[in-house]
Each structure stands twice: as C-alpha cells, then as structure tokens.
Length: 341
Image 1: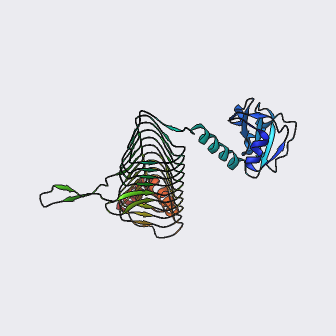
Image 2: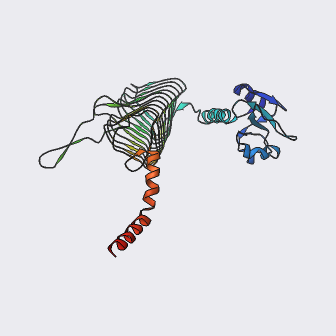
Image 3: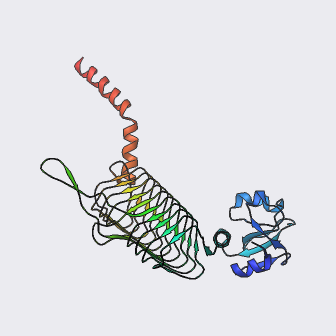
C-alpha cells in the first residue's frame, strides 16, 4: 500500500485538512501511529490521541473540530469507522492479490479457469470444475468434480469442497472449512443396525458470504443446503443437511444447526447455540449465546435466551428467581417448622 492522503480521500469521498501529498504506506491504531501510518478516530474516548499521534494522516468525522494544533493530515468523512473498514478490505485484497497457477498444483485439463486466478501448491482441481475470474485458492485445498466457484472468491488453505457444490461471487472461505460432506443420515432397522442414507444433493452458497475456519456445511440428502447472500459464519460451526439460512444472517462460533431447519433473513445467533432439526426461525430473530432451540420461532424480530429458549425478558426474570431458590427453600423450611410447632 502506497498512496497519498489526497488519493485516499478521493477513494473515500472525503475532504482534506493539511498536506494532501503526505505518503501513506500502512494502517495502524491511532494510539500506535507512526510516520507513514493512516489511522482513524471514531470513538470520542480516543480523541486525546489525535494530538499526540505520530501518524501521517487520520480519518475523522466531518464534524470534528480540533481544540489545538494537530500534526497529522486529516481526512474528513461521513463515517470514519465505515471508511477505515473499507480501506482495510482494500488493503486485504491487495495483500492477497496473487496471480498464477503453481506447477505443484494438480489441475484437471477438463476444468475451466478464469482470468487472474491464483491456485497454490498441492491444491487439486478436479474434472468439470468451473472457476471464475480473480479467484484465489491457496495451498492444499481440494475442489471436487463439477464444483462452480464465482468471481473474486478467496479460498484459504486446507479447504475441501465436495462434488457438485456451488460457490457464489465475492466469498471468503477460511482454512479448514469443509463444504458438501455427507449429511448425518442413517436408517435404523429392526436389529438396531444403522444403514447409511445416501446424500445426493449439494451445497449452494450465494454471494458475499464469509465462512470461518473449521466450519462444516453438509450436503443435502436431496436438493440443496443453502447459505443465503451476505451470510457471515464464524469459526467451528456445524450446519446440517438441507438447512437454509436467509440473507444477511450472522452466526457466532460453536453453533450447531440440525438438518432441514430454515433460518430467516437478518437473524443474529450467539455462540454455542444448538438448534434442533426441521424447525423454522422467522426473520430478524435474535438468539442469545448458549441457547437451545427445540421448537420453531414464528414471531419476526423475537429475542430469545435459555437452555430451552423462550422470551429473553421472561428468561431473565426467571433466572433472578432461580438464583434465589436456596433462600426461598430456607424460608419455606422455616415456615414449615413454625407451622408444625
């Protein structure tokens, strides 16, 4: 990264106060800023650092007014946090903007590979795979037969994508992710033996999805397991066969979703949540961490919590009573003694 403050202001549609030609070569926190760094100020409690930082430039809100002299060039924008986040994304893309096919990769001649693609060493690209333009697939990954990968997707090392799965545009898939492994489907016979139910569907991941490390998404028994546009999945999540997750839903780490459950759009699900199979979760539902969901949530915008989750305010009132149970028990015993006397 090597830009002038003026160029960065143009990218962010901001205005300059100070030297527009100061050179920026890296990003940093405002409290740690050094020459060549670009920082941002979004939280008022860090305001004092803007007068002491050694950074070359700082992104601030349009309404910011300095109380005293500032050494850094100011880039004024409508939303400093959002603008800095935009720059971080650009910086990250530049960092991983590799192009070329490693001579140590195993690429089937009957695969289709777009322009400006990077494929790292010891990655296998199988027959019938279609890879869009500007895709980055890092080392030791496995892309099975007839997989489709859209433009601008980044796949980090040690990712496995099973046959027939479809990956959309602008996705980020972190290391250790497995997409399209068999769903947990077995039939029990009269002798208590389990026979495997073949899983012949696939996984379909829409655009602008991010999947955290070591998350697994099972293929459908029939049809597709679907991850909607804009979904963000944390690390260590298990998604069962035929699950559907609606657009822009975010799910924190160690959550497990059993097969055939349908989760709506714009939901927020806390970590270590367990969701039973064949349920429906309405749009905009919020589920607190470590909750257990054993029945459908049909109310749009509901917020729930608890091992057998119910309305969060009722749960919190109940928990206050739960904490007082020893005191209540002692009082009850005392009353029994007085009554018997």
